[in-house]
Image (cartoon, rainbow, N blue to C red; front, side, top):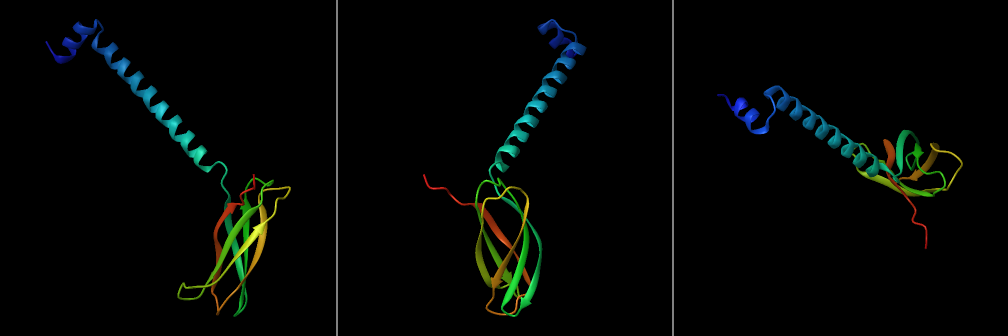
Length: 134
């Protein structure tokens, strides 16, 4: 008698029925874990500000204008930190800009960064919602 035959005698099911049952249980387990992973992914991104760098213009040795798109709840104000770097990747300028509530999301923004020396790039370092009092 084989191991499968022993199991069939104990459970009263044929080997084929036991195999099918484990495939169903495994499939349900995979479906459940997939649903949990999707839920965690959606929950982790909810309520966050997202942005996309859309380019920059080196205006002078003392200024870089940075273009970026904000994806957010348009009814809430956002604060973004914008940086400029020189050719050695040192930060030569940083500014904070507030994006007020608006009617739409995404929205295109432009922020000017005053620099201590010539910059070769400008970008958004981070954005977050401004905490509302109360």
